[in-house]
Amino acid sequence: MGTAKYSTYDVINAFFDEGSFQETDAYLKSSDGDAEAVTGFGCVDGIPVYAFAQNVDNCGGAMSKAQAKKITKLYNLALKTGAPVVGFYNSVGGRLEQKYELLAAYGDILRKSAKLSGVVPQISVVLGDCLGTSALTAASADYIIMDKSAQLSASTTGESSSADDNLNSGTVSFVCDGFEECVSKAKTLLSYMPSNNLEPAPAFESVPGYSQPDKLPKYFADENSILCVGGGYGEPVCTAFGRVNGYPVGIVVTKGGVISSDASKKIAKHVHFCDAFSIPVISIVDAEGFESLCDASKLISVYSDATAPKISIISGTAVGAVYIAMAGSASGADVVYALENAVVSPVAPKAAAFILEPSIGDAPVAEQDEKAMAYVKANLTAVKAAEDGYVDDILAPEQLREKLVSVLDMLSSKRVATLPKKHTTNI
Image 1 (tube, rainbow, N blue to C red):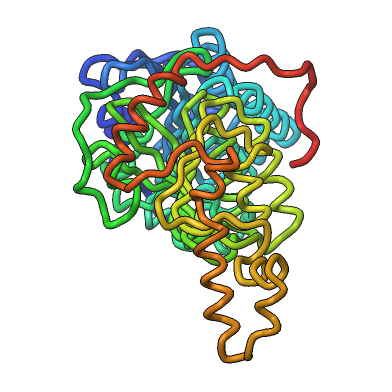
Image 2 (cartoon, helix red, strand yellow):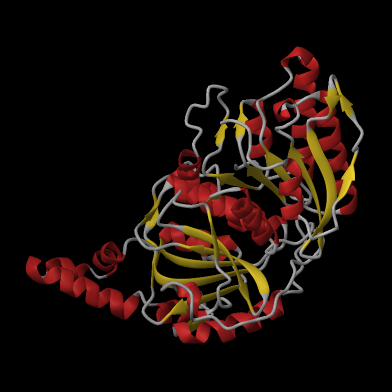
């Protein structure tokens, strides 16, 4: 990919608030000069953050035991103080002459990153080459931002390494044009996250919505607060961050049809992250089923395990396993709303009509569809589900913001005691 047209310190200075960056281990030496990365801490929009940036101008930014020592020390500081870690990747690979010491260095970084997972947010920003084992370290973060001209691949040959390839596979959350845009995206993403799993996410000034794209979140999210994550992977399902009355929320939007295996994984990852940092999850439910039984089971497990505030809004059709996973008792939803024309059914609505009202099958074939839909509208409505206690309220879209502001305020003190266990096994 060639040498970057900007220096490592250009990246660092663009990322941190002016004058706040403090370098760590500035004089640490590698085998033939300074270590191949800059590490340190400072403030990003007033919030303490740790960061490291591989220095492509110094031995190509190659990983070495010295560089690993600097990065693992940074991870240790982040663990002690509870602040996010952002890594900027641009490297020709590793110092192969260090052989097994190099493998141990990579192992130390991966182990520290795994230990930090769920304790503080981690973001990787890929600005240039990031191949082989270096790609594994970048992929260990919660989110990856990638320059469109960079390469990211577990293969050292760069196979399927382009930004678009990684975005379409769900590996990368954002693709940007140039290091300035990548840095800006990292700062924006951090603004939705708490510093660690014991602190609340930062609040911003509240501005009512209605200027978002023509989707349901426009009715409740603050103006221009929606940040979609995951690109086109798992479409048409959308996962995003947003703000309601100034407070960050995670948003999941299903848009009808069947939830694919990729979409299930996309939802599970987003809910899992939000739960780790107690960010409320708002699920907009409109789907008729799952493509994969295995992924449906895992998604149910993720929702069930999540103890963050959970609000479900049935916007269209919630059928069988979809209702169970994302709005029913298995999901552990704290509050379930439905729009006025929503449908809740144990199986596909038309099939349910034939099963529950056998007389429809005795009607002339030309009339059966009409009779089935009439049965659905009369008996499988959100109103019926509310009457049976499975939906808390029926709302018009314009009522959502007021309701959600109130319920999120109520749920802000939510506390859930969980059974002692190491982790869930259904992953």
